Length: 437
Image (cartoon, rainbow, N blue to C red; front, side, top):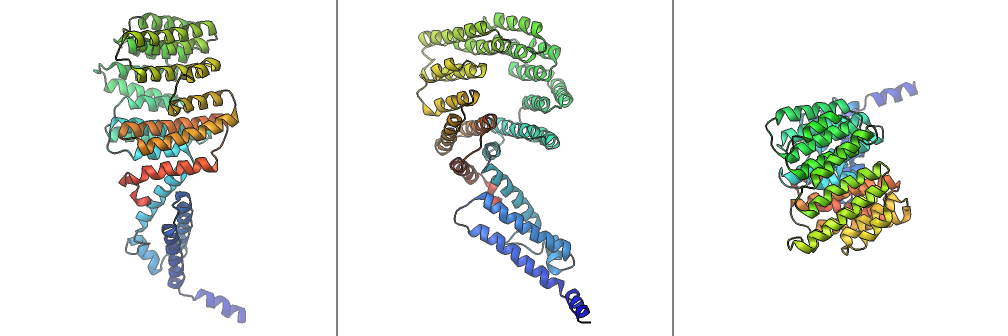
């Protein structure tokens, strides 16, 4: 009889009382997050997750309570937020919490914080989201990767970004094993832009087809290009992409690229195409020919430096960076280091040295240099002005993330602290993230 009374006593308890108690708990969790002196989105997100569980308990266990009805109707608020606003804020805080831990997500936050629908923002967003999608695919989360790329397609269409951005999405589809989707996207792009006379547009599409393994389509599109720079560039990329499967065809296309590149007037510009050709020769195992092309590229930038007053020290430095980067990617690390030592600016030399350390498997050096690289990006965020500067910072964060992944090392506590500063700096500049403050 006593047991029955106790059980029934529990059954007759007022659901409003329990729901109200949970409501107060959820409010206190959020309030403590707001009052925390040191702002950490990761800590905020933990509080939001706990608050969400508490709110879900109200809606699930006490659906008829006054609090539950009020939350669903929007009459009852949690620290001034309706249920919908709370859910939106939770998503924003989740993104920023991930960005404090990962350079990939940090790159997206920096890109998203850029004002307006500019070309720089379009490029930065596309690069960041594609990198995140490919990260998902590498982790076996193919559905999530595909969904993100499909969403990126809609974003490009909805915001009036340049259609050439679609070629980057198509290439990413190929990388995650969705070749048919990539081909469909490029085909639509060509039909939609059938009267387009922009050579750089055709370069993007031909590159896409080459990476998708559609050699004939890639060459057909490349042959629609008139400018020697873009045409030779396109053919060099096609040759490099098909080298493994179509060695003889690649060799012939590469020779065409060399012949056409000879018609590029500016030596330093011609050098850039020869670097792509050097990459191809290295990939095909022809090291002597590759080194010959590298040497020729170096001679060309020296020639331009002597004969063209407009080709200043800054331009020369950028050319050196490009040569060193290609040397490293081709596996010529001694030559890459030699060129890198000629670059005096730390903000440009450190990223190259980090890349070399990663490629040569020097994990300790890679970790040290990548930590410095993150610091360079943080300083750039503080000093840089304009969209192009922020686009650069976002792209550098993507490169940092890829190098950490390739080296198989994790960010340390100091690096995460710097990353947190970068994220908070981006958030402060744009009202898009106001709900997460």
